[in-house]
Image (tube, rainbow, N blue to C red; front, side, top):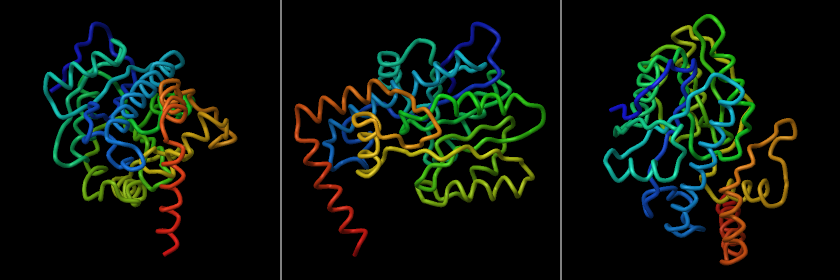
Length: 265
């Protein structure tokens, strides 16, 4: 179900953030521990706000429209996104048991709304450089069928952009594994689809990447020297508040040590 209603000619590139409403125990649960379920839900909201702001910042530099493709469906989720995100971000329901079907549905709905290119974007990379979103839109505006893939350092991808409905890109993929980007490139090769691969970035989905986010936002440690990160003001504000007013620093250190021990075993 497509909730958003267009009121003008569609920009050439539609970008849909794949998202869940922030419900403790259901959002960003891979960050628990070191976070509590309530804190993880708060980070989900902060990430969504920052990613939405990033898409709108890119829209100032390229012909882009922003959306959230969300689930589970229902009035509570709609109310959540309407309460927390700018009105310029449209809402699209895309909720299936298989995540590949969620991605494909979001792309099909974006193309169905008149966009000539469709991009699915994760909600876990609040500092993703705006320039990469602009580059994606510019590449997809060029003539000829093509795709753009932004690989994550964990083997997944932070975005995928296409100009047509290529269902094969989402078939027989072990989602949430470290093979997602590789297999997607193999699927593209099978169907003869050209793919431009962007620089890698990180998803915040475990203690290591949460510490990477902390380094970027609180300690000015660049993840990539050649790319300017999105400032992610909402995530930075929440991180600083929890570091100052809770024992998050201790929990991060303890969880990091435990992860290092497990990796060495």
